[in-house]
Length: 225
Figure 1 (cartoon, helix red, strand yellow):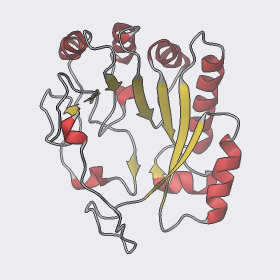
Figure 2: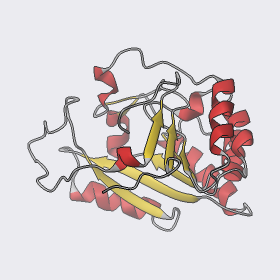
Figure 3: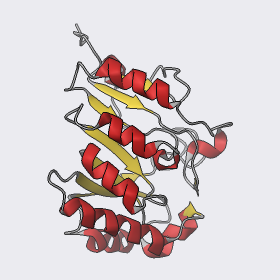
């Protein structure tokens, strides 16, 4: 018998469903009207309700790019010091120094979605590799000098076009610069799970709905994360 927690152990708040990239493997292209931003007052209300539970893991991304939100910095200021663990992933295209400083003070784990140099601009359209890499390196420099630096990660998606050499280049590029390097396996090529030639027979029932809450940018709640 599953014992449900008094309050979700993990809350995922979508700051933006809008995104400025059209990555070739992303299922966004099969969905419509993903161009929303969470109202700042709604965001503050959600944070106020969760604040009495500081052990709750707060995740600030979902279907879009959080850094596109025009009130992103005030949002970072509002959550500062309220939760032990705050996580976010970003494509880093809009990561300037002001946002980096705000994030260093408020976020405990940040993951950068990137790729190898020669694949990057084919996959993450229309981003430019050198600009994104520079943004990440600037953040890492600011983060390194922070009193409580965030744990950092770079991740890439390995698909049919990815070679072992690509993965080795990716690892060598970021080794020693970030805390974690992660390679995610592509799980869909047409927006439908299980559509790839290589199937994963070891998938098990998911328990996340029992302890995680997903809140979209319009305030609606997802049935599953």
